Length: 200
Picture 1 (cartoon, rainbow, N blue to C red):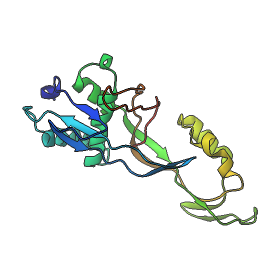
Picture 2 (cartoon, rainbow, N blue to C red; picture 1 turned 90 degrees about the horizontal axis):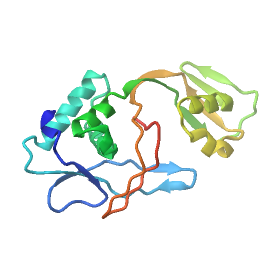
Picture 3 (cartoon, rainbow, N blue to C red; picture 1 turned 45 degrees about the vertical axis):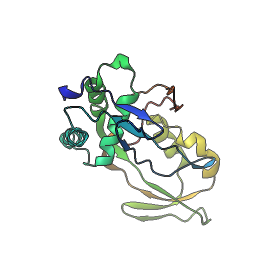
Picture 4 (cartoon, rainbow, N blue to C red; picture 1 turned 90 degrees about the vertical axis):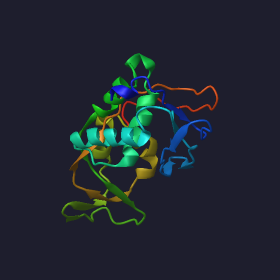
């Protein structure tokens, strides 16, 4: 990837009109205050570079495949976006992209589905790999703390007396995500809170 070492890739909240660009496919999200409406994010890529953007995405996907992360073109775009957000002190574009790809690792994931129904507390069913019953809040709190996630602390009140369908842990390949700093774009202000871990 030496050809992208000096390539100027930027992240903007509006579509650039003077160079090649691709939109980051942000998914709808909900936090404790309701739906989150994020602005569009665009990767700006010089059109006159020797390495076409499509080839670059293919190279990133190849690296993801080597690390056993499920090959997905959208995640390659996220990897490029994260590398742009890393401070310049982390090296050139190649070094920053490698820092993102090096964080891919195996993780144990537990899936929860919160039920709206209110059942008697004594009811508990197990249909492997699923358990249906009262939410085990201590377990969820511990797992969130271990993963450095604030999910449980933000939704603690909503989990009171909650019933869930819980799936047994399963191994997946995920991105630990390098720490990124709060940034501001001089033309289009875009702030990202500093996080230790980002979703895969």
